[in-house]
Amino acid sequence: MTRILTGIQPSGELHIGNYFGAIKPMLEYQNDPNNEMFFFIADLHALTSLKNPAKFREYSKNAILDWLALGLDPAKSLFYRQSDVPAHTELFWYLLCLTPLGMLERAHSFKDKKAKGLDTNAGLFTYPMLMAADILLYSADKVPVGKDQKQHVEMSRDIAQKFNHTFGETFVLPEPDIQKNVQTIPGLDGQKMSKSYGNTIPIFADEKTLKKKIMSVKTESKSLGEPLNPDTCNVFAFHKLFENPNLAELREKYLTGKIGYGDSKKQLFELVWDYFAEARARRENFAGNWDEMEKIMQNGAKKAREISRAKLDEVREKVGVGLLV
Ligand code: ADP
Ligand code: TRP
Image (cartoon, rainbow, N blue to C red; front, side, top):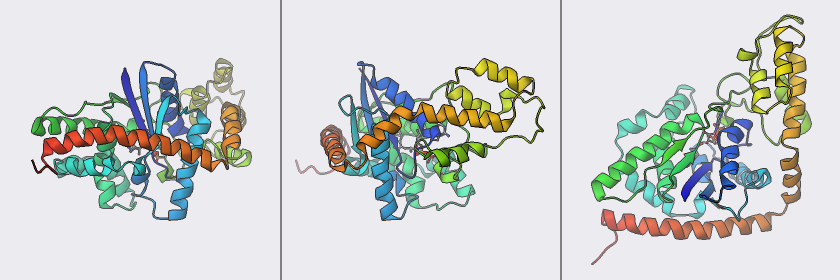
């Protein structure tokens, strides 16, 4: 059995970077009975950037709805909210007390956010260790993430090793699992697609918004009839990602100047719209049925609390806290 775990922050609408980097691989793993699956909503992580309770609730609810719509099956995967499981924040503290500041200072994600002038609080700075707690509590072997999170998973591994070395063998060392041919999906402006950069293509945007977003994917300026280079074109890269069945033909049209970016984008819109049609229908079925969804989350939380509590008890004993005799 392989334990596979991933979390996603409910910090905005899910986008196609999330889908190809994290969601799709998890859905594929879910169908293999040799895998034990853990999916969670990393809502405590989202607090590092979100300070609006109404938005926070809305995003958390939508994240749950979106994952169920996209095919997460609670009968096959343990699905829970991080904030429902107190062991995460307690283990976070034990890990922080072993963490050299330099390790956190080297985190690319923190450095990028700081360089972009985003709110840098201590939560954001220490967040790789909360992520380590998320992973280590469940003895996850494999953690599917986008390339941007690889370093964080490596930090989880390093801190697990340090803990094992200091207090004795306790944690399984997790491996980041990066989709080889997906890597980092570019956003509308060509840099990494990310909610924090406002350059996303949301999975469940309405038709008009989706079209507008896709039409605004950044391309070189070329006049109509000029040949285009499919290998450097973001729009073409998306056609590939969405498995356009006529890719070879489209490539030919690019090379011979028989298609402009505008047309290529229109075709891409159709492709993306159809790609998520089934998920959209499931989402409509679920929407508004919050009682049922809350029940799913409570069930998941109960099991997650049991598993994580057992690990935390072991950790407490190793560290030496809370014992009179
Ligand atoms: P965001 O950067 O939009 O805030 P998150 O940090 O919540 O996204 O990412 C959730 C998951 O989706 C992570 O596993 C992350 O690696 C993956 N992911 C996010 N953006 C991309 C991207 N542009 N390409 C590939 N994977 C991504
Ligand atoms: N930090 C991850 C992100 O922003 C989300 C996350 C939190 C996560 N805890 C995790 C991903 C544990 C994998 C495993 O994308």
